[in-house]
Length: 417
Image 1 (cartoon, rainbow, N blue to C red):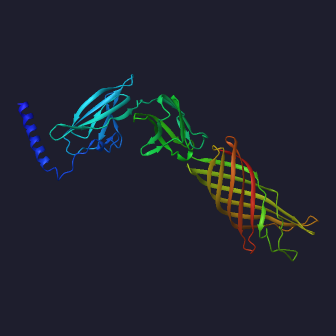
Image 2 (tube, rainbow, N blue to C red):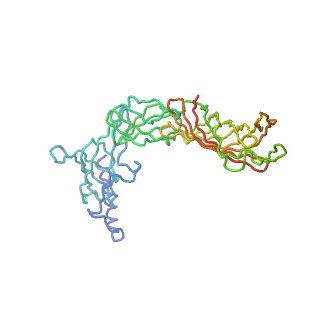
Image 3 (cartoon, rainbow, N blue to C red):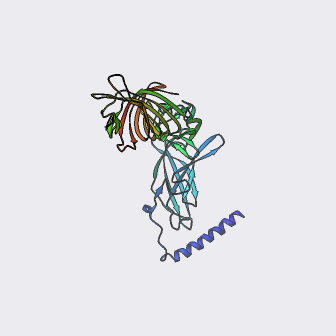
């Protein structure tokens, strides 16, 4: 029965072939040998690759796809695959007849060549393609046995390196951290087979819990977790105390005072007042990779004194401000740059005039609104202790008409709690 069916199919194809031959002036002729193009990476469901991985059981098996251009009027193809042996000669390892313009094989690593024999609609041999050589490189399954450290703490660490231990960690391997759709790739890596060093850029680190993945050439991969990127402290509290003179820029501290029925326009006209101190508290609850946000409270106290021929003007100068603070660490988190902008109260108290005989006027107190803008740099010499240096600009809204502005440089020591 099978022989009769095959004979019937043969006759059917024979009839179709005769009809096509009769119509041959209408249809283009089959391409010659030079028109056959072998493609190892044809556009197919394999995402542009010439192989895919079949994972069955405990081992992964590579399936290679060999693809070529479809030949017009071809009934079938016979694909011959040969492998180069140690003697330098090729020996046949695969011979397959197919009706499509591709075959799928599973070949070991080595050097190969293959050829296509084309059969026409009468199932007669038409022609052969040239030999096409290709190489299959051994794909190694990576293995991870451990890694260190277990976490990056963005507010404590100053190096961003992970050391991996395992097998088949290759220079060509691809390493990355993965959490949902977040993928972090190291800036560079050094692989030595059984170990690998991954170096990351702090700007790419996003807080979260990740798995560490390695993917070798050929697509074999493995992962291990959990690796954590986080801040070790929910907030920072910095307290500092330091030296802070004041340097007037414009206006007067202060003007239009009457002494013994005489108007004193500027009781404090000096360009520098050396005696001063500043205390500062930073509260930083918002920490991000691009910087930290918080609130700054500062209070500075300066002593103002100016001697004239018949009297001396004395006062204490108090500035208290609340400010928004932006902070950014650099140089392996050993230094931080701070910017602040805020407002507060400037107070002139115990303001009086002294005379040579020991007499003095009654003291006065004045309060003024003021704004502040400043910057500072702090460096840790022995954590959690630090030294900071900076400068603030303060503008006072004085109702007397001569609104003073001054700068307040400072040098301080502090501690991060």
